[in-house]
Length: 116
Length: 114
Image (cartoon, rainbow over the protein chains, first blue to last red):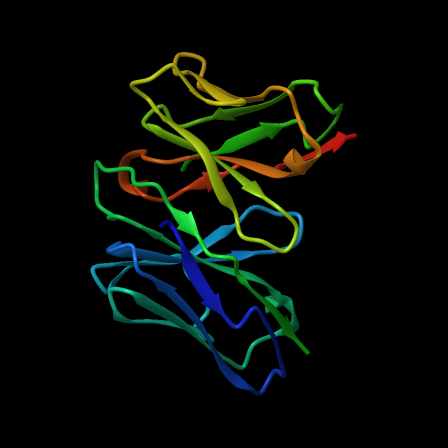
């Protein structure tokens, strides 16, 4: 089973709202990722968690706050977003994330976010 | 950092024809090259991948070839079917401090006409 699940599927929020995106995997993977994808563009990496610790932050604005409560769950907390943050937010997981090892990343279906 | 270029940006074929998508990468240290298929409203789905110690890999109607010297890799789909219509992304990973980070090409919109 290579399933990554994400909730909600769709989200509409105002610029003053606080919301959270959730991601879950039960493959025993120890690395989890958040990507942002704009229409007709490839996914862009935002954050990487390895063994529940933040490993990479691709200079993402602080209005995006990731959290990894345990090895199966990944959250993305959203606050004071801008309309240009509207996009498809993808979660992915892989067995590991470490130097010298290239692990396959499995993506979830994404959350389509609209910021008004 | 790594840079991946993907061509063509759109590809239209008749059902039963073959489709080829090509990617070039810039970082000779990259050693992992996955291909993803993304259907409308869905997340990218891994369809095949290849590592730098292998020159070719095949899975039913899909094959990937890798030329490390020229730094390019290609996706070949034979006997295309309408359900192959989607956006295809190539990616490269593995170079130096960018381990585990996928650098994607810009995508190819494949349309298979019945």
